[in-house]
Length: 591
Image 1 (cartoon, rainbow, N blue to C red):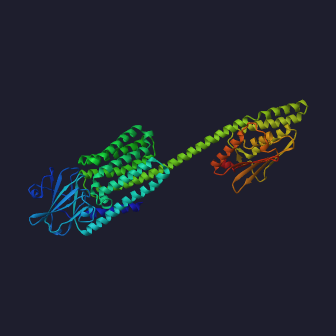
Image 2: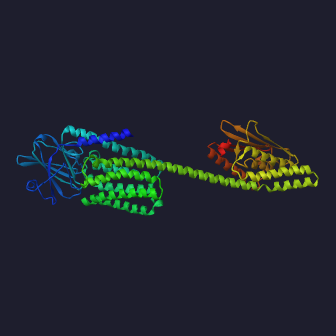
Image 3: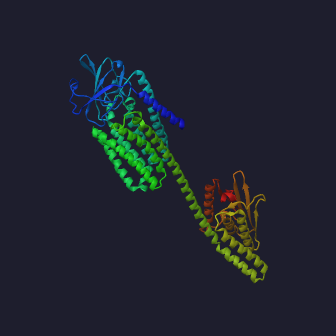
């Protein structure tokens, strides 16, 4: 970064020194009525100029310039370093007469004496040269006595500088053009429109547009205010969109909306009205809007705490400085030099770069907001499922509770106190675990296995050992350190008991828990030897617990970025297998 800064400093200084030229004896006359001819002009009184740069700002007058050529300047070249002068009539003195040559931005480019964006003409043997100039654009007349070597050196440096500037604009346009298709944000469309207008505007101001875009259509130079109006429109729309003014500052939103409309009206007027006043007005509008936008940016930063307004405000500072220097130079307040003429391009390049960075930050912000919204949506969905599961868990199957109490009553009636106590202990532990675990988002696999064991023990006692069950857990699996959502296995076990057996053969339920290390998954299988799903009578019953389990597995998959699976395999008359695959979640992950 430091090397780049030093490079540009030395480049600017070098450019300034190469722009220095021999002092000329220059005088001028303001022809406000446009009625003086070359034959009459030597009769008027000319005003001596103290420097080589004449500045008449926005004027509708014709300006006559008289140059006394020193003997040492024979066969050299005079440069008028302003590409936007409509008409230049050059009069060389030849033996008590004058030879006229006409140049100007209103003429095709190939009619110029030199292939240069500035106006160049030979001194020849003239001792006295008169130049008549008129333009609807700000009439600044930098006059330099130079030679071909200096011109080539200056043109090389100038082409490099502006090539770099327009290259930056083009690169940023292409980069954001492709981003606009993916992001589909209106701010990008307005930003791209602004880059096009700014690039075209400064190509016209520097004369490059007439060289490369419309060398044979010089009349297009007249639409400079039209392009400026569009640039103002696009930057206002970009600012409103980027700063979200409609939400953050409704007053400024409407003020800028009105200004944007007025800028379009100004642009349309330029298509039909060729006026110096309109150009002067456009300069004032540009400066005022730039000031207003930077104030809006820092207002939102300071009072609305809008962080993205910081880079927006910084982007405008350099550009505003360039605009201010150019306006002051055009109106003769500050001298004309490389800095005052070209700092606006440096500020403009910095502005579009910072705006591009701001948009990139906006994308990151959108992505972050989207991720947070997805997380919030995921959390809300998870909380909903948890709530539904808690309701299922707290609303234990009524028949099971009724039958459990009936079994307990029978044991007491037939005077089997020890069995009644054991049965009551199992039931109380199951109720307590249901109440405790239903409050938790995740529980250890050990707690879930213990709850399932209690549940199956009660059911086994209730059915007088008519069915058997096994819970298979590998010894090396640390079930106390692994976590799963509560109430994940029990609904499937309950379904096996309620719907899987017909009382014609011994029942058996087997629960297998295995670790799939390759996929980082925990596999849980609930296997019964019941009648199978296809032979279960239809009772207009929808398995809510199965749907909730499916939703919970999908949420786990999104949260831990590991696939989950829920499958049911059933064969008529031979039984059903429910296979669950879920992420292996240890204590660190679940926290």
